[in-house]
Amino acid sequence: MKQFTYVIKDKEGIHARPAGVVVAEAKKYASNITITNKGKTGDLKRIFGVMALCVKSGEEVLIKCEGADEEAAAANLEKLFQENL
Image (cartoon, rainbow, N blue to C red; front, side):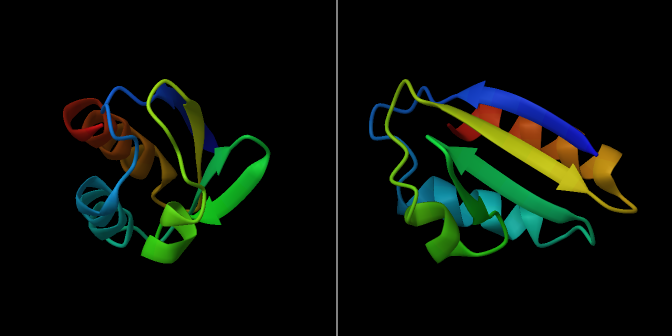
């Protein structure tokens, strides 16, 4: 399992546009990928799972990748979070 944490910098938090970008990237991988915020966890491959967490600016999220391509998934998703959120 690979994981990383990230503090959301976008002033609007995780809203529809960046959520869509992140979900599209997560769907490229066979690994199970989750996002956790304030004790709630969602599937990073489902837009409603991400949006339901209502992540605000300044909050920390935990991304966990588990599966055959977890290393690539974690590395690319971390880069994507840094660029978009």
